[in-house]
Image (tube, rainbow, N blue to C red):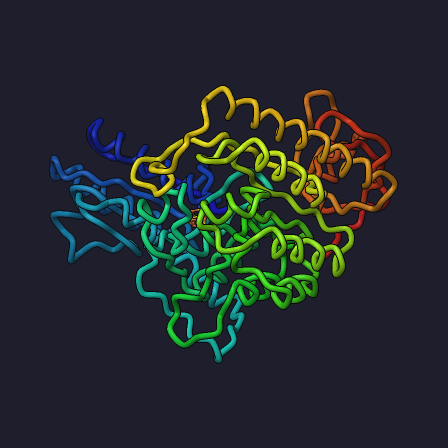
Length: 442
Ligand code: SF4
């Protein structure tokens, strides 16, 4: 994790703005430090209200460069605004659009990191993307797992979904920026990255005449040393094929956990949802995953009480979902979104019936998860140990996203991927014993 050291001169407004920028850096995974010797970034918020404040501001920038020559020195504020051509900081911004300094700092850090690591990307892939809004780098979610956004927007217009209107068409992030971020995450100590986006399977389809795809992204991230494992975010089945699944099965660092949104197990309802696949297609995907990766965990989303869904279709949906042996089901009671096609669909399902259909699926979800957890008892799980729980147990997640608890007083296990044999069901997962203290997939 990169360390940020902040110095502020001047008024309360400056302090407020320093706090705001500090939060922006935190959102990118930076950690605040009070020790300038540890800083990777100095952020100096300057003041020019008096000649003395002006002098101190310049002095602070010079001192920072002297004290930590390896660090990025970033300056902003009134003194910079009035003396922009003389500013000696590595990156600087005046009083407007301050937030862009975060991107500039991150990009300079990445450049420095890249020059240290010099990992080459495949020259056969032109990774340009025109419209993707690049936010720079790390969005830290918790201590061990980080998210990499690779794509935004969606072209599918499922009849219940507002996303294509709210976020626009699908845009893929540049391959190079994704890989740079993965390297930065790895250098910051993250062991697991989750590939995320609105529709990650659409990655690369908007690059004209190009062949870069989600599989290339996973392989590219897998090549980053230090990343132990990669998890795929939610996927839309209409973009998956047997060959994509086959490619996934060959990537060792990829967690064999696939979250594929089913939404309904009734073909008529799927059609009304404008989902562009049927249950037969979905089942083929499930069978192919199980054929190539028998231990894979498949999770899904279901919408309960979609307009026009009959009692029989709901039963059909329940029984199809049960036949897929999902390890987890996220159940969403249908809620109408203004401006979507489904808003016009009739007959609407009453709130009481939506509630009862939601409960039916929640019960199936509970049972399915229990069956999956029981099926893992006695099997080897690679667990990223993340937490020391209040009751003293350690906990983490398996590749299949099963919560695994273990009894151990050894804090050295934290932040490592270790082998565990689950022995019994426990709380929301299983409890087991450590098989090996060796880091897996390093
Ligand atoms: S549900 Fe997914 S695939 Fe369908 S429109 Fe929304 S974001 Fe796109």
